[in-house]
Image (cartoon, rainbow, N blue to C red; front, top):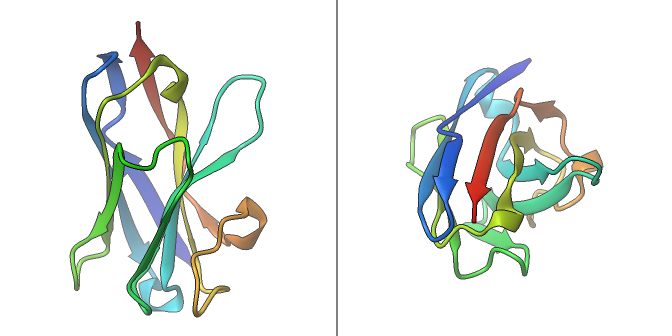
Length: 126
């Protein structure tokens, strides 16, 4: 089993920055990809970004490309999501997730992830 805990959410103004963290524990050797998803009220959970460190690959949704950065420190079981130039439409609950199902790519579908955190709220006011 893998446990994921997100932190760093909060209330910010448009244009501000925020950094989310996702700390993993348990059988961390059982996965090679972590992704960030978000879900706004009344909307489906959507892929934001992911990182596959086995092949040194990252992938971003078009809506956050150029503003968000995912990173992982080698040897540490923590993945970060740096969010810059935040917009009100970025408001959502942000979830991190882990998977080993995409050995050579970054899985983008939520159904492809096996482990999920509890989520952290990000609210961006205009």
